[in-house]
Image (cartoon, rainbow, N blue to C red; front, side, top):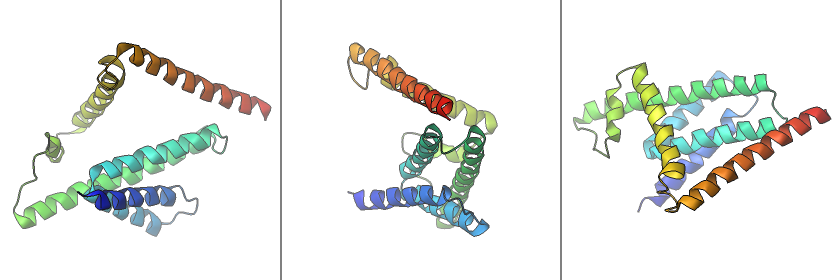
Length: 177
């Protein structure tokens, strides 16, 4: 098993979120964030994805708690995008260099190693669209996640209720100020 490595990756990804959300940023801290995220991605790519999801959850939570204005939320999200894009480009570069030096090929894993065959911006848009489409289908349309269409409907209503409560709370807090 490789649980110890995965937990180190998750801890590194979580620590990156703390660093990224720190108000006092310097060039050195941004470089450290990118390098740490490259290492996290090298340990296990899912830990990098966990870090992305966590940082956005924290930002959205802070927004709904009125700790961030819309403008500050967008500024933070753009900074986060820059850090994570830099880290994935760095990871892909390091991966290519290591594969070249060692003269080995990336192991196939359900076609995921094809990411190294980047074909342009349309490729990124297509992959992002497909990821969201397949995720939605998995949870809500096919019923594969729950194996029961009634539970699919319950999931949709539950998500709508949660979003309704968040938006209502945000409007209520905004009017209270």
